[in-house]
Amino acid sequence: MYLRRSSRTNKNGTTTSYLSLAHNYRDPDTGVSKPKILHSFGREDELDPEALERLMASIARHLDVAVPGVGGDPAALDLEPVDGRDLGGVWVLDQLWSKLGIDVEIRKLARKPSHRPGRKLDVALLERILFALVAGRALAPSSKLEATRWIREETYIPGLAEVDHTCCYRAMDWLLEHLEAVQETVFFAVADLLSLDIDLIFFDTTSTYFETPFEDGELDGTDEGLRKRGHSKDARPDLPQIVIGMAVTTGGLPVKLWVWPGDTQDQTVLTEVKKDLAGWRLNRTVWVVDAGFTSADNRKVLTGGGSGFIIAEKLRGNQAATVEARSRQGRFRTVDETLQVKDIRVGEGLDAQRFIMIRNLDAAKHDAHVRDRLVALLEDRIDGSDALDADKRAELRGRLREKPGLWRYLRITNRGLLRVDRAKITAEARLDGKTLLRTSEMDLDAEQIARGYKALLEVERGWRDLKQLELRPAYHRKDDRIIAHVQLSWLALLLIRTAEIQTGETWRNLSAELDRIQLHTYDTGHGTVSQRTRLTAKQSSILERLQLPEPPRYHDFTPLDD
Image 1 (tube, rainbow, N blue to C red):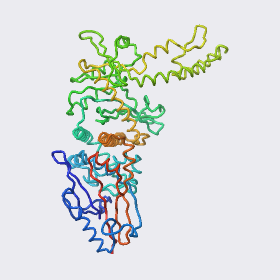
Image 2 (tube, rainbow, N blue to C red; image 1 turned 180 degrees about the horizontal axis):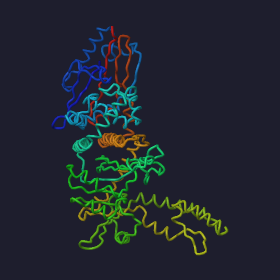
Image 3 (tube, helix red, strand yellow; image 1 turned 45 degrees about the horizontal axis):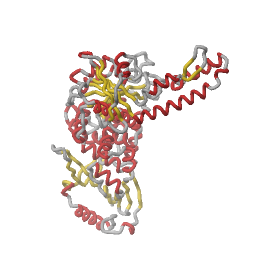
Image 4 (cartoon, rainbow, N blue to C red; image 1 turned 45 degrees about the vertical axis):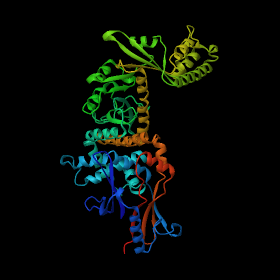
């Protein structure tokens, strides 16, 4: 038996928690452990803690055993530790899962006749398995088979003592089937909770590879499947991959993820992305994307339906408008200690285009430092090359060509001699720390545009975090399982970002501290009792900033069978 907490979200957005006495039993049909309520104590905020302690003391007296912290001196007790599990990280994620209403929405969807998960997976179990898989991605990313061991042996998840990998796959299949409804409902619940600005939508793509030498269809001569070779952003062009798109808000909260075949080009996906979000309750949005989406066709797509765009242009591009904007004279306006902007208008009337030149002073220092090191290395490599014969110089030139950073500053004279290109160095120095943006927003303040694009870095951090959630390497083979695998990582990243936004700390630091909250089970000689470790000041601070309750001090008291 154990003390079980359940929560429901009220119409005003608040959460009410209830306590009950429960025990787990094994379902004879599925073999899965399920909770059974023995007694309800009512609302947690109306419960008298001293009454619970009196109840525990009464049970202890009946069993002739002392309970730590209740009517006895714990130091005097002869308790043998029999189990220890991680509690803090899962507790926080479970509370956020409930606070955002994800559990309620999943159960609500699963109760609809057309959405039922099947005879071997009831509604409550479905929700608990999906949460456990998401928590596993955030805290202990692994294969689904390893996740079942983690659930069974290493952590404490209320309502889910254990589960087999078959049920995990059934839950993933259900999630994929009803993904659209889950994504929209969950995102807006988070946006409302955190009062997020969703007028700016940042979008970017990445790729992730698979540990197999063959792409889908390669052995049977078909062209079906997601795993295809393409431009790899992981520097693994030898392996098949998938392409993943992610839209996020200004604060880095993931809106939605898309999955495409690995040979998909960035320039072809924006139409689908905008169409997918067209039915959501978004205000007029400004899409912020990088230079991979800068084509005229993509700009037309982004301005459809009254939307706008902010696009990073290729700073060294040779388009007429880009060249003119880059060479336009004018003063930079200081935004803060490191950021400066210059507003540039090119053309007139219907042909008018707006560019914003950004200069990041910290990035400018970094660019100059890197260039100085490259030039010094180049000078060292070509020193004495005039004395070499033509064949040896050609061989050296070939080796330098393999180093793009060095090749950029190499000049070859009419006589075939190798020199440092001083004119190139001067030209590159003019671009130090600069980014050129093209925008459809003719009236938006240049500072807002600059800060908006700066937030696109959150997408890049999102990719790093997403891949740290064991997004790669991936071993799934079926398309639907691949997509479900990615979407579980999306839900994990959603919870992580929520925690980071509310606390102002990185998930790495938060999880490291929360993992120190443990649940220890002791053998008293007359049964077992489970008790969490005492909270540190830092752990209490995290819970306070997240506006979450502390985990119950006692989770289980199981007397020995007669």
